[in-house]
Image 1 (cartoon, one colour):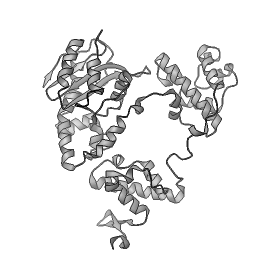
Image 2 (cartoon, helix red, strand yellow; image 1 turned 180 degrees about the horizontal axis):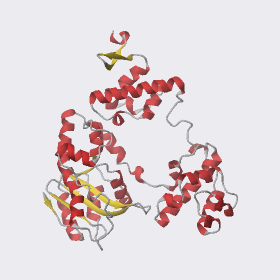
Image 3 (spheres, one colour; image 1 turned 120 degrees about the vertical axis):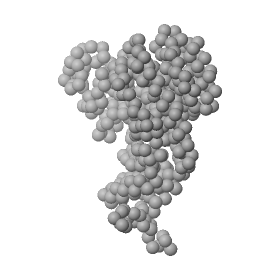
Image 4 (cartoon, one colour; image 1 turned 180 degrees about the vertical axis):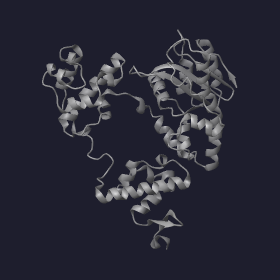
Length: 392
C-alpha cells in the first residue's frame, strides 16, 4: 500500500479524491480536539482504500476540503468504513449538514460477530491482524503544528489496518448470513438527526425529577439559553453552566438577578453582568411547557409493576442465554427498554418483534412472557424448554 506524505494543498487532495472515488470502499478516521470548545476542532483526516492511504491537514492555509466532503456525503457508490465513528460522523455533519452514506461501522459489525458490545480499535486490530497497535500518540495535541512523522504514521495506521480488516469482517458476515442484521443499525447511526444540535430540544439532555409544566418550561428556556451561549462563545456547555445547575435554576428560579450570586455553580459576578442578565431574561420569559411537549410518564411504555419487573428480569436472562448461544452482542439483539415494554404488555412498535430480531430472539421472548417457554437446568447448564402444550 502506498502511503502519501501529509496532504496540505487542494490540488493534491482533489487528485487523491478522484482516485478514491473509483473504490468500492474507503476507510476513514479523524483526529480532533474538543476539550475546550463547543464545536470539535478538526485537526487531521485519514483515509485509505486497498491501494493507498493519506493523512490530510484540514488546518493547512487555503486547503479546499470540498472534494473530500463530496466523497463522504454525495458519492453513493463508495462505502465509507469507520470504527466507532459517531464523533467522526458528527464532524462531517457540522461541515456539511449531512452524514457519510453509505457507511459501515466495524464496531457495530463486531457485535454481530460475537466480539462484544464495544470492542476497541486496538483489540479489533489484534483480533484480525495479530498486530499490537502503538498507543504512544494517543494523547497528542493534534492541533499543534508541525506534526512529526511518528504522529502521522500513527494516525494513518488507523485506516490502513481498517482497510485490511474490513474485507475479512465482510467475509465473516457473508458466511454467517448476518450482514442484513446490520442494515438497520447502520442507518440508525447515520441519521443526521443524531448530530443536529437543536437548542429547542437541548433540555432533553438534562436529568430532572420534576414533571411540572412550569419547571420544565423554565428548563427548556434555560437549556436553550446555555446552548446558544456555548455556541456563540465556542465553549463546552459545562463551562457555561453544568446540568445540575440549570436543573436547580429551573426548579428554584431566582427572583432577581442579584440572587444569582447565591446559586451554587455560578460565578458571583453574574449577579450584575450581561451573561447573568441574559440568563434572567430566559428564566423570566419562559412559558410553561405545552402539553404536547411534556414527556410521557413512562416513555418506555406501560407501567411495569412489581410482577412486570420480575418478568423483565427473566427476559434479560433469556437475552443473555440467547446472545451466548448464537454468539452475538446482547445489545444488538435487544435493548432494555424493549424488554421492559414487552414485560408490561406492549406488543406493537417493538424492534424485537420484527424482522431478524424476532426470528433470533423475539419469538422466544414472546413465548416466555405468554407461558410457552420456561427455564430448566440440564447437565448443569441453563436451558430453555417448551411447554408440553407447545410441543404438542
